[in-house]
Image 1 (cartoon, rainbow, N blue to C red):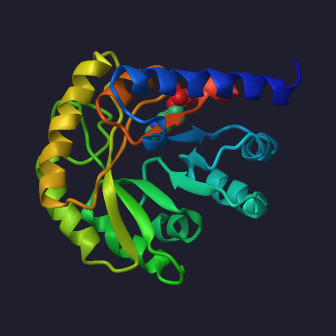
Image 2 (cartoon, rainbow, N blue to C red; image 1 turned 120 degrees about the vertical axis):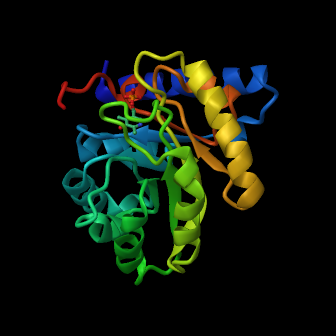
Amino acid sequence: MSRRDEIAANLATVRGRIEGACSESGRDPGEVCLVVVTKFFPPSDVRMLAELGVTDVGENRHQEAQSKAAECADLGLRWHFIGGLQSNKAAAVAAYSHVVESVDRVKLVSPLARGAHERSEPLDCLLQVSLDPPGASGRAGADPGDLDDLARAVEEAPPLRLRGLMAVAPLGEDPARAFAELARIRHDFTAAHPAADWLSAGMSGDLEEAVRAGATHVRVGSAILGSRPRVK
Ligand SMILES: *Cc1c(COP(=O)(O)O)cnc(C)c1O
């Protein structure tokens, strides 16, 4: 099987899974954007994805994302930055990303705004919220109690546009439970920020649970492109 056929088949399977979860929960599949996570995979794969109708791709490491976005600039893709952000890299990330999904502290807002300053469109931002218990090791994302301050900081920075929330289900936890909690957090959040109604949740292993909990974006890597080398 050619690489293209393999990607096409996997993509069809994942799209079918999204449609299945949507029909179970009475949602329109058009409400769920598939973000294909291309980290570790070459620009040639990104090109095939674009030919197969993918519009949104996700990357989690700045240098790799920057060079891939430059190499694939002709494809008109939307680039989502989904990884941990260092404040000294945030301005550079804002220059090539269309959506930054991992805004998790106020300190990132001013470098992101600086980097987004010359864009013609505002930079879409999602606040990453942690579903881990407070104090858990390797915790990524803001504490739910800190979201309002963070949202206000983003709303006050004009080159940034607050779009919603992003989360990852904690390892080893039932994703349905984690995403039910996320749905509650989102309910309160959108009451205060009604325009920020995107919810990025769900990966290869738990996208159905995320769609049932209201995800508008799923971030799927290995189910489409295959397994990645294990690195920390
Ligand atoms: C790598 C990654 C994904 C994709 O994970 P898969 O299990 O390969 O689908 C999704 N979200 C984030 C934040 C990631 O870093």
